[in-house]
Length: 131
Image (cartoon, helix red, strand yellow):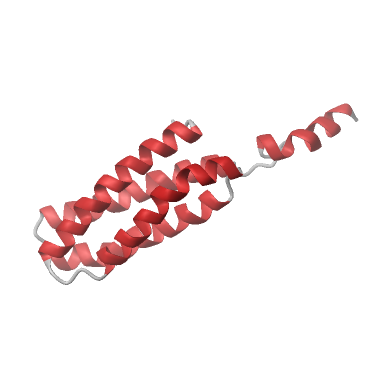
């Protein structure tokens, strides 16, 4: 009976007792890794000189970012607020990346996004203690 009460009381803080699913923090940490992977894929395509393939993979960057954004909304208020400015900044860069029409535009937007992803990755790791 006491164990059940402790689970109920701590459920919001610890993500539940025996919930089986990853916590909101873990989802954001996982989504951060997925975003990094997608950005790396685009960079690899660009370095190989394959603009068409890079443009194709931009959709993956956008999807990974959208998932990260959704997961971040499920965090505790102070954690979500800490990440909100960096996420908002990336929203604009992702839109510009998706509308890139030349290799130069794509490279410039990807450089900007790369810096923002590194900054957000560090902030997520610091805020959520990701491994």
